[in-house]
Amino acid sequence: MAVGNSGVTVLGHSLGSALGTYLTAELAGRFANIPLSACLFASPKPGDGDFAKDFDGKVRNYIVYNYEEDLVPDAPPIGFSALSNCVILRQQETSPSIGDDKACCHHLISYIALLSADEFKRVIALQGTTHDDCKCAACVTLKPA
Image (cartoon, rainbow, N blue to C red; front, side):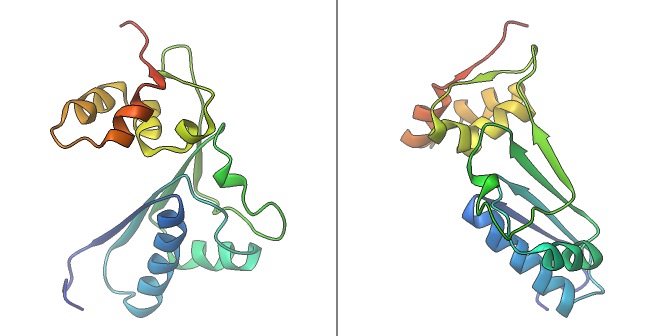
């Protein structure tokens, strides 16, 4: 493998999260001797219960972040299971609030805001922030410090 004994972290959002889950499972099966982790956001259910159990047996270091108002993590509704190491993000009194627009509830910029208001502000200030990021960032209301 090109990375030698270095660790690999797989990142993904939405469909990329499901694909990242499959990539992580494949890497764990082929390269059991390398440190492997995954950080996944807004993940649809990647497989049935047997797949989720097998994934947990192969991959010890992963986390899935799903926002409670996002519809994508509930898909598909029948016959598929979420991975077990999942953190459900909820709006708190001290956290930014996310507008009701379902697209903004799914956008990665909203997930960033829920995880860290400071990181949200840093990312939005970066040069090269896309029009889509700025549009969805308008759905995020920061709470006064």
